[in-house]
Image (tube, rainbow, N blue to C red; front, side, top):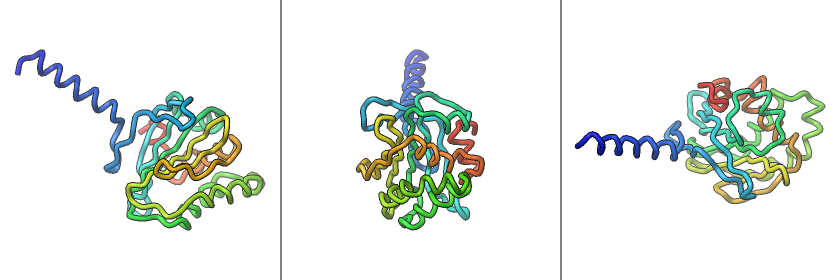
Amino acid sequence: MKLPSLFFALCMIITSQQLAGMETGGVTIPETISLHDNDHVLVLNGAGIRKKFFMDIYAGALYLPAKKTDATAIISDDGPAAVDMHIIHSNISKEKITGGWEDGLKANLDQDRLDALRPRLDRFNALFSEVREGDIIRIAYLPASGTEVRINNEQRGTIEGNDFFRALLEIWLGSSPVSKSLKAEMLGLD
C-alpha cells in the first residue's frame, strides 16, 4: 500500500471513531444527541459505568451544550442537558429504579428540598417500568417544557421545573454521588 493510501485509510478510521463517540462497558455512546424539540444538539461531556456489588448496571452518559468539568456549574445551569442510561444489567425492576432515585436524592438534598420536590418526584417515578439489557433511558431537560423521560425513544412524560432536573443531576454529580468514579467519568475527568 502506498503512503498516501495508508494515510487516507488511517484518517478514515480516526474520523469514523470520532463520529461513533466512545465505547464503555460494551456500549457505543454517541458523541452528540439531538433532543426531541429539535432545537438542541448536545455533545457528550463524559460517560462511564455504574457498578453495584461488582456488577455493571448501566453506562451513564452526560450531554451538555458544551463540555464542562465543573459539577457545581453544571448543576446550577439552566440550559438544556441530558443523561442517557444504557442498561447493561439483564433487568432492573421499577422498584430498583425508583429506589435509586430516592437514595440518590436523599444523599444529596436536605429534607426541606426533598419535601418540596416530592409531588414531582412521585410523578417522575410513575413514568418508569422494568428495563432490560439494551434499553436506553434518556432524562433530558428542555428549558421550554421541563424534564422529559424517554425509554427506548418512547416519551413517557415531562416534569416541570429546572430545579427538578438539577436535583436529579446531583444523583451523579452532587457531593455524595451514586459513584465517585462515574461522576469523574461523566465530568470528563477520567
